[in-house]
Length: 478
Image (cartoon, rainbow, N blue to C red; front, side):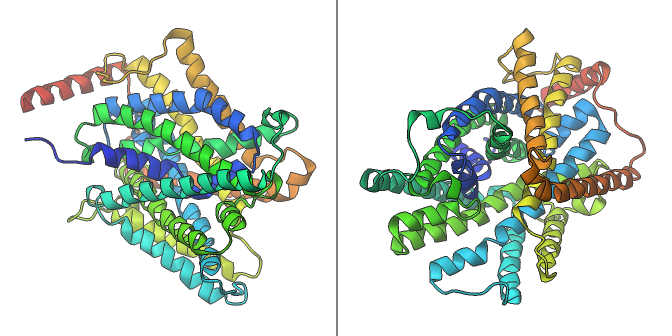
């Protein structure tokens, strides 16, 4: 009997729904015409090696733990615990950052003006409603949520296509809002701008590892994951570029709002009529779909880490009927709600700085993937690999070391002041980063008390034993 599971269309939709983030198109567009160079450069030097490494790991080491299981096998419990925390902690802050956009976009759609600072309880109620709808959506099994993944991907592509097409029309009718001379397409390597561009675009590529936490819901993950990563990566790069082009056609790069850039650009081009309201509503829907799709990966990773003694036990509580990690989902909702309640304090706490600080932290978990991949290749060379990373020898090392350097640069650009003007914003970020790192270490130490011994990672002997056991189990099933 054929194994029931996610269709390949749903797997591709999941990649698009997770990786393509509509609200991330505006920061990319703010780079200006240089973005075309940086997109192409990072597709070649980051996306391709990252995606191909994920494809090999996801097909050779099938597990609901996904990326955390790879790091655990490669580097042991200590680094797996840290990566699991880094992976999780960014998520509730991301939900909170999107929740703060929701009330403002609703007023743009309705046409009513509300002083959200004066009506903070109304604002908070709307934000909390968004948070808990996303939280409850995470209770459903992935296989029962195909409509969310497929619908979210279709709507996201539709929004990007509409913004891109309207941008082409606007530029043809009114001319480009930005300078389109050939020199503007060349990279500016002066100052710290280039490092900042790395972090923005790398953020737009993150998420391919999420589908590797869904292997249990796939019909043929060994063949479907590589195809989804490669085809999805190409599609996402095209979608981002098309949407960014539409934004840049209407608004000069130095005037693009990183939060509302897409909807403001569309309003600039077509006014506040039906098309704008339709796209703005679709934009809000994509926020639900994006957070729901990410929750499947984040919650599975957190639950797996809790079950191996690398996250607090609350994350590992599973629903006996659905098999979903409800403990992780509820924890996300509670933490996000507490973050949003900080708005009740007179001075603003929720800002882009908080999000980008945590992005710098979350990049670290991705950074750990590459040395884990290299270690697993070394200690487990006989592992059956349906898909294999195509580079060999020196090219193998170069293809993995270059993305690691780019990830380190992204972290530096996110949290380290590269000019005197950035000191005021970055110093609080550094303090916050230190605080969250300390909390992560507390999580790791407390969680480790539930283990009888610390797993150091695969050795050649242990890898051989595991491969033999898996081969015997497969033969018995046949």
